[in-house]
Image (cartoon, rainbow, N blue to C red; front, side):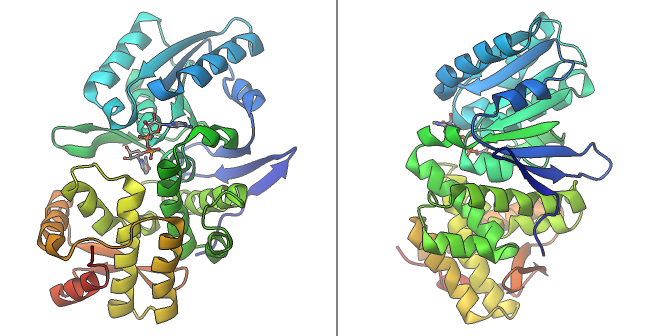
Length: 367
Ligand SMILES: NC(=O)c1ccc[n+]([C@@H]2O[C@H](COP(=O)([O-])OP(=O)(O)OC[C@H]3O[C@@H](n4cnc5c(N)ncnc54)[C@H](O)[C@@H]3O)[C@@H](O)[C@H]2O)c1
């Protein structure tokens, strides 16, 4: 895999183009501030629904004031939602639809998703469903949302049936990554985002790994890490917007990662679970797909230097296997893993021998 073409820099802002098949192309902008770009992205809207989590009330209020003074005649309705997963519920979506109804939100109007992946998923879902689809501009404020959740058009909420099972593909009309918003992000959330950054390095762009090896905190090369990870996602999404093929490579480390999240009842951060999942996928790649020892070992080295977990208890293996099998049933297909045949060379491994799965787990098992 190669990273995306279509990356441009101008005036301190980098723009990465996403071309999602039949849907309209859009830009992911990376820089600092970006208020002018946000005001420009409102293009033609009379009403704006600014969805944000409680934790971002102060910057959301400031954004609202700035938009009001940047665009005369515009209405900006702030929709505060609960923090994290509590935002991704039918009740909160219903609250948002009620607000849109009460202010007379039309097809020309626009939703802004200002927050982490939970809010960008919710805002995208509300925009996808209101009047069968209105525009959404995503303004991600966590590292994970910048490099993953806000780009690519997957939106959704959680229901009693499970996490992310109800949703829609709905591409944003722009994604604005203001790196300054990350200054208030708690360190554990930042580190969790680095798991997805490292994943992009292993599946497509080894320069990312070199940058993380130079500075595992991710702060020194933050901008490059964000840009390169987004370029990887943009390139994959552009080739396969509805996950019918290569987009699945983005799930590297996620088969076991999702199982850990389930077994931990979603009390682990997604990135922490993916970190263990990446080490497992590397072990499986070595056993089943011919990955060299050096690249396989590099996974644990990079992720533990970041401070992410790379081990999981031996006795949980049966529960993890069950969780992966239930997931497999729910998807109506076979147990599938993304593995690597070499650095930046992902492939799919279907229904591997159960003995191999257990042997690979012995490499991550430990306290
Ligand atoms: N759509 C996709 O393709 C996709 C991909 C990956 C993950 N996701 C989804 O993303 C969600 C996880 O996203 P996340 O890791 O960004 O977590 P999150 O959205 O839950 O945010 C984590 C916490 O940080 C707070 N927060 C956000 N930005 C902040 C900031 N700048 N300063 C201080 N606090 C801040 C939030 O209010 C929340 O309490 C999950 O629901 C997951 O399913 C979606």
